[in-house]
Image 1 (cartoon, helix red, strand yellow):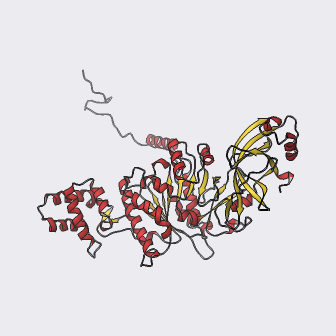
Image 2 (cartoon, helix red, strand yellow):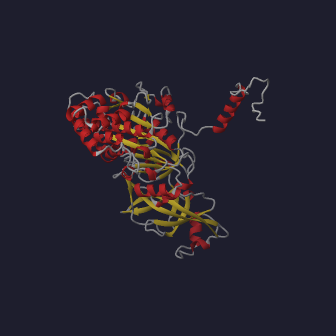
Image 3 (tube, helix red, strand yellow):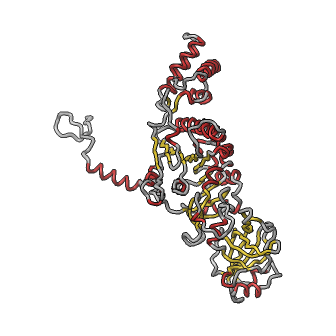
Length: 547
């Protein structure tokens, strides 16, 4: 039971929903929505500490008026419980939703199936207890120091508590295997939050194999993990950070699938499709995997003749779309064993590639990686014998709701089947409504930040099972760096402040005013780029005399 000094409110009665109750607290108790409170009830003749989340708060003036709706509880009883006088006292009326008590056998919350009785005293849930029971850490006791556990990511602390009073540690295995979505409006801190998770995954207690698809070149500062004491292990471990720019990103032509080529050629005629399909299948049956457009065209000419008009038209299209594109090569390929390795974060910097080429390189890489993971799990020879996690900035670009990206199919496959094969995906996006709903709904853990667009809010509501109405109500009012964490990595959603990064942040907005000033000063110091025209008759104003 709570001692009187711990009491911050008392139960007034049931709320509108079956799992809600109403309580009151004096005005000197600053209890915000999203706060976690606790009370004690008897469950199967055993006292249980039950947790609840505050979902609404309103001020009522004058103690008796606050209880007109519940005549069974007299104001004197409430005042005595709270230790406040009965005359001219301001109270808050609050609504809370029951979460449940922490079942150490099931290592999650269990609903007591009963609301607290009117007059039940309430307390603020203890910090250390919340650190254990809020995330899905599988702890068999609610008193363990979670910071000592391996494989956990310290992402921040509860927003309604003092800084670092209640720290939140997510189980990396949960979000890395059941997939992750980081959803936020531009400027709300989604890339910052993603970098915090990358930092945590690359620490000695996890040593992740991580691949980051970076369409805008926003993650260049992650290299500063190397040399930082926070990332160094006692056994000499230090994360390796590799960068691949567009000059290093190559797709071996034979790794393309026929559907990819059809899409690249932009709706070839039926006759062209028939010739290309026949020749492509013939090339795929060959032992050699290092063939290019010249060999493919030669195969079509061998089958249909050198004078076939459709073959000639296909040759022109293939040369224009593939042969002259530096992304494609008969022999070169991104080496999988170099881009994924335990303790390594590889950033694919694709900012100089157009969106279509970004999607194509992603498509082929994901297919190859997925094949290797299947081979490893099924006992066949594989170049990748460990789980991998791929994180996608601008995730709606690679898995669009419109369905017009070649990478969508393989991303749907991985999000639905990848857990069994040790292949996890993370989606980062400012437009949830533009992400394929099958992909988004498969992201078991969600970090949702400020989102004001109603369509994007609806996309979260429809695709994220753990995002209840009380969670969605918080989204528009969040400020940069604040987030709601929900899903498989959590036993219940929580509102947090994301911790500061260890490495510098490299994805902020440009300091445009400062750059304008510098550019202006530079221009003033430089000689004028234009000279007045001299028509051979002395000084000129640069204006021709038309008289």
